[in-house]
Length: 448
Image (cartoon, rainbow, N blue to C red):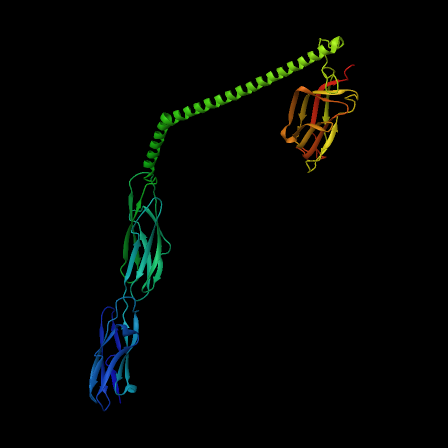
């Protein structure tokens, strides 16, 4: 037959942190001695205790079981009714176990806490604090957060001031504190303020904080400026006493060395010019001696031919190149641009400048490339190249010959140009236009 149970009071009320007890009557309705085990079912089993948990009853015998409920004083058990059941299990007749049901009314309680982080801050223009509103009670609490400035030196603002905090949770608010006045230099100022949390039917919860206002100029600025100034003074002293004399000495030594090098180079050039002059003089003396020898061997007729008592100077073809009429002319070129540097265009002496029976004796040449063309220019005697140069190597360049160049009628003077890139501004035709000016004499055959 199992057991029957009855609960003395099905409605219980308890304040969190305290205890309430209920009595359960258990009767053995069977015909055998039976052992009964009691436990709690429902959400209250974590904070409920059954005494005793096991009892033995004779047939028809009654027994009492005490159930003690002690809900903790925190947010883990919300306020309101919590159903429970006292289950009685029969060892001899398990299918006929029974349950006595009831409910515990957990009363509400409030535990509102307020924190400020940090409690004290340092700033020059604005400080930021965090306000934490924590509800450790067992029901939602509507809260209003207000600030106060007892000395009226701060502008205080919250991102929001009204909120509802659920049990077992915390709300976070940003509090910005801005001093009304600023100062460049001076001691720190302590500016107190307060934060209050207001809830219905509950006393206010207060928290005090402080803003330490600092001077606008950093404290390290003046020492750093003094250090920099001292370093500047030290550097200036070092400059004028050590570095500058050393630099000046080095500069003087460098200038002296450069002057000595320049003087040596000028001396070397002077020596080279002197050697060239000596060589030219020796060459002239040799030529004069040769003329004298030719005059001595040629007899009176030859002596008469030389107005000064010397014979005429001739080339290897017997042409007198020591005198003649002066001649000046210019060969201008107009060469097409082409990529092959081996291809040349030839330009000759203008017609009528050199008679067919005259020999050209050149003593001076002026090369002109005013537009900066690129390519190659060559001066030829017949098929022989006497001089070749790159156009990019000169704009104006002149030559004076100690030993003149001679051009016989069968070995005419020509100028050849290989144009690779016309200079700027290039003509519309895209051609290179260097020119060569020539000066010399026109000589005829030596009289027999």
